[in-house]
Image (cartoon, rainbow, N blue to C red; front, side, top):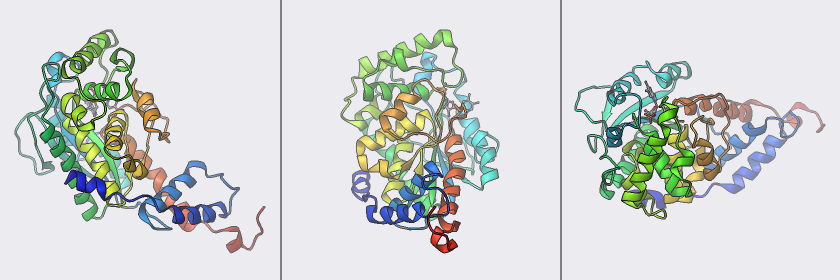
Length: 347
Ligand SMILES: Cc1cc2ncn([C@H]3O[C@H](COP(=O)(O)O)[C@@H](O)[C@H]3O)c2cc1C
Ligand SMILES: O=C(O)c1cccnc1
């Protein structure tokens, strides 16, 4: 199902983009003065095939999973916070949860690998493992599970779209997940973990060398193949990261825009684009995360973030904020009149 979905991703409708750009250039404003908002709506029209795209049905799919590498002391918070936050997110009690109420965004909290068994009707059950294995001792998961996690992401994107979503955001909750994210980034870029490991959720600065050592050990032990994104996910990845990459692929296959969140989501985007570069056409950035590796991840992906507000939370919080800007771009395109319609010659 993964490879079939990848093959369904269509190129952007370049002809329509040219005509939308032409019209946007003639709206009643100095040409180019709405900057990135203009680029957003042109790209959205190419994705959707609609000259007047709308992104008013907003949804964020939050992939929740635990990470066995937490046994190596790479995160400050206890792993039990993953489940607590997975419960709190759909109840509107977290960073992304609270702000989703303001912007009328639907949240899907998905258990793709939380390490405990529980019942909660607010959480969508797709548990593949009780947390990944400790990647400092061996592969985080099998190749088969990595593919399944990608497919759950695709399935969740389809589910949200079936329920009416016309824009998706990717979110994650997984204590310890900046560790596998940094490992993936290191493998894909060749940068040493000692150069790119960051503080995650306030991991102490004087322990960062230890965190980088754990990441380095995992790469040396597992030898992920840099040219094989599934091998990287399986050996030094996470279920949440794979699930987010799947959501991006699923959105792209359906012609629905997907907004990336912070550092962890950007690393997931790198994996999705390694599987098929065409996914990138359907991605929109959100914010520049303060996490140390974020700039390298963003530069490698090649999508410049819109928002610079010192964010470093995850959960999909930055994607949610970007929804507001993207929706504003749609209104600009739909509601603004052209110079001709106003009866004025171009100034
Ligand atoms: C209370 C709390 C809420 C969060 N919400 C998102 N994260 C963020 O922090 C985690 C990654 O950082 P690290 O790798 O250092 O654990 C992820 O769960 C991410 O979503 C949180 C972290 C905490 C502690
Ligand atoms: O940018 C992120 O996604 C991020 C950064 C730190 C901690 N959690 C998430």
